[in-house]
View 1: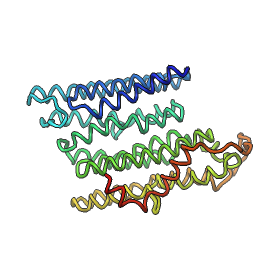
View 2: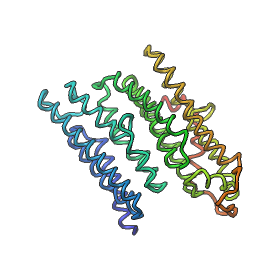
View 3: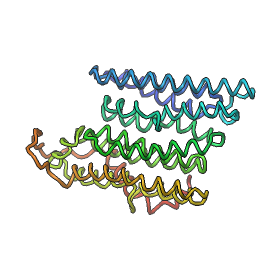
View 4: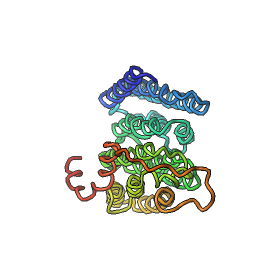
Amino acid sequence: MNPQAKLIFALSLTLGTTLTISSNPLFMAWTGVEINTLAILPLISKSHHPRAIEAATKYFLVQAAAFALVLFSSMTNAWHTGQWDITQLSHPTSCLILTVALAMKLGLVPFHFWFPEVLQGSSLIVGLLLSTLMKFPPITLLYLTSPSLKPSILMTMAILSAALGGWMGLNQTQTRKILAFSSISHLGWMAIIIAYSPKLALLNFYLYTLMTAAVFLSLNSIKALKLSTLMTTWTKTPSLNAILLLTLLSLAGLPPLTGFLPKWLIIQELTKQEVALAATIIALLSLLGLFFYLRLAYCATITLPPHTTNHMKQWYNTKPTNTMVAVLTTMSLMLLPISPIILAVV
């Protein structure tokens, strides 16, 4: 793909995201998200592999259906209340339709089936965009409409997402699918808190984006698409593999790493809101995610394959690691001590 085309798609993604997060009428937000979707489709299908074409088709169909529902929700609300504003969503039917539409767009359970398949058909860089940047507009819409949405529905979806994301990630051998189920599990944490503390949900999303970007870029540096390939990359970039271990543990939410901060604050807020049972359940379900993050970390740094592998040991890489990877991994590991400053800013 030539640089001019890449520039146009990058500008379109920026424009679509900016339009969505800065618009009040739901119709304008819908326009921004459609620009985003049309910009990402060529990036998904650029390899012309049948799996990439299939991923792009699935992505287009799901996103089109989701935002047809957003328009339907907006029109239903306008019909009953005369309001097109996002923050004036008050009719119960339109609130329910919007919850379903945003869950489809984000990949929350039970509308998650498309996300692992689309991520598997994309490259690691496009997978990073799908897991982070493309989630930002719907998370923003969820943030703006959170006072109108039913906490019980969001909590049910959140617990199911945390459970299914952890459970289905256990048996995967492809790194992109593991990160897709990790994303579904993290979205569960965001959905459970957004009705009680929307700012905390956004903080969780920012830190999740930071840690996921670090993992995706590290995997892209060592070209690891499968666990069997990951087992032999320690000879190529030993230092990056060691840092990848810590970044994965941060994504799992282990103290004293950055990923512990949002989980700690969410459990604290849920307890204050007297939904300690939900907090206990989602905390226990995060152990499933911890298992497959440990499995990834174990494959990356601690073990060699116990059998003869078809992958040759790779030559040691003398090129310096990308600066962006270094900055993101550092932030993924060391932000917990400055959490009071982060909370003051948020």
